[in-house]
Image (cartoon, rainbow, N blue to C red; front, side, top):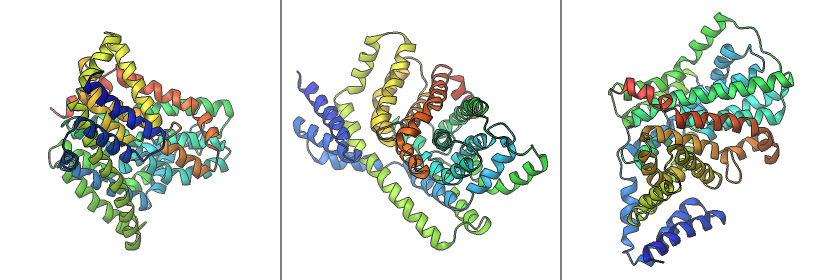
Length: 431
């Protein structure tokens, strides 16, 4: 075996081995890179250079602001208002609370941008209410964690900013726009699955639709939903960059949470900021260490090899697209979202573009695949959160997830093979 081949084996093999041994992903990435650098006899100063380079990005500054915005709004008492809004819109249907769960995740995802935050915030409220009204606890939990994935598709999502950086400068505004229809499609898919199950199990209907109540709830939720409009519309119209919009949204979120909804006091603000720092430190360490890993992948020509290998299996674009999705789904079972985006994007993006997939469309494909991975054992963080909230064994929750896995896979395939779903809004709004 050539020196390059052995180096690739050390890099990827040691990384996968450490992940299976349950090392922290950032440690696994850093150590695998160190072992490879030592084997290749490259200067160890490369580690420091690449780590600094990895986090020295203006667009990356948007990540801490989006995280802070999500935590402030999530802690500021808006969950109940969004639940009331969703209930006024779809609560009248068979399985109405399940529909509310799905639609509420669509609204809340546009604020938090995090599946974990969605599950923790909404799940702690909705799961007990659904159980009290006659829904099975495992169904309520499974639906809550499945619908939380809408939160990483609907902008603003800090994971899309990370993808834009990993992909080499894809437009964040285009990614934001591209996420709306896939997020809505996922919501519709989950609602259809929910309705079918609700009819079979005879779950209850909610109160009759009331137009007056709907407008009242829209008015109460206006200040929360306006935060999303500030970010997305501002970026699309070119009023400010993604980073500037995120900073403005943080100030706005602080004002709304403390002075309008009054769900936070200043003591709560400091606690929320402490949570932000904790989350951000994890994300930034991952980005820094993944930069070394990405440098070595490029140095060893792994993206070109992966492209040639997949094309060598088949020259059929459909087969290659399916293989890409299978690889991402497998990675989602053993890794968290951010490292998958940072490590897999440089390898698989050239393959995707070679079969005609736009980098923006591929970003949504990656994010949805990673979102499904958050719900799959053995490393599904959101799966663990849902199980902890409902106090149900993880095995029971996974079993209840089966119909929703099918809904999510169907959505993934539609997004993969019908590019207009992701590209239509960017094509008309970003001209």
